[in-house]
Image (cartoon, rainbow, N blue to C red; front, side, top):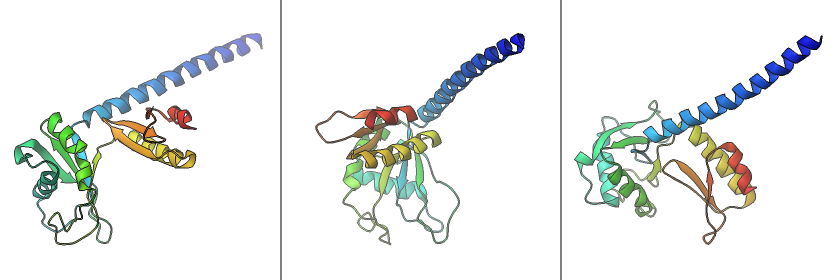
Length: 188
């Protein structure tokens, strides 16, 4: 009985160590996934039509932010997910050739705030166009949780920068970085 109890205690310690190691490895994989997306942006709100030229539509939106952007600055563009008949337009993933241009466009995204899709030259007015970081699934999930928690505790601002989630209670308070779910305790 004593030997079994000792073995059980040893196995519990090993199990806890393995759980901790797995958590660390999961975090590293998620961070690596996010790192590979650092040169991408997601464009949401661009009206979708049959036979569209997605690259041309994206370039048109990007020129509103930075007129010097060119076709050579964009590596790949495509819509995400399956086409939906009645749903909203699918977001567009854009991979840039340089991180510098991606950062220039992301930092200028506020220029799109007061611009409707019709003002951007699209035939239908479907609202606003938004530029977002291309977050890995784990980061997207964490962003949603951070947003829910932010609303509960009265924080006013939530944004991402280089895949890091940041929240701020008011304009004159330093932001709090959210890297893991445990970091949500920092804003409670």
